[in-house]
Image (cartoon, rainbow, N blue to C red):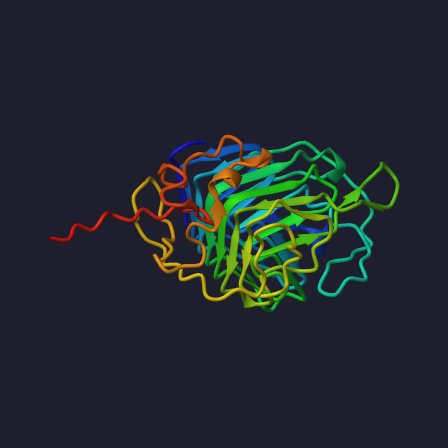
Length: 328
């Protein structure tokens, strides 16, 4: 999917079992394997109506693939019991693990087959266990102003929620800003499960989240990150609080205001958040570190502007271009 706009869709019903066990997912798009670039997913919602208690993926609900040069903004998830992934939810939504982690979901729901339905761009997907879910890579993308209902008993991952047990989530040059949730306002994970016919769900290990050159800022409700497990920082990430477990070269936790501009048309096919010239994100990545393994092919920003522009690469989805000043 390239150059698409998915806006103002609403999904309210997804049958994942009887009664309150039903789950609403993917207000903008629900997909098995998604390849998305140069697109905008805006102001969609996944909401559990009266009698239903769970919802996930206000903008995107995806089991794997890649999202590049895309803006996910103003999407929401609303439910009374469990709500996750205001912008993006990656996983199979097999939320069957008892959990003693604060703010994390835990259920005793037995395994069963499930049928999927969604609003916006949707498709029926086969029954799948978390362990079969491929990885998701998000590159040069902006996830901003998404929210998870504050009234949900468990509300996590306002920007992105990753279900444990998948083949992992990779964030490369991503801007996560101003997303809202009670736990993990910008980024969080939820327990997944492996289900066998006739057996109760079994817990799975953390999927592994790799993060490089990503900024997390202005969380609303909870901190930037929830209680993440299995996170691997590849360096040069920037968090405005100390909730994210980043400790690699170039990482900043508890950083100052990154001075991101409002979401606007800054060139390119999608709206972006341009850092100010005085932003600590500008030139924060040395030229020889701009393309580590996970970013080996990333030589431009979300708009298609070359990286680097000045003395280094900028953290986040946008590379600042400074026009020369002539004196005399």
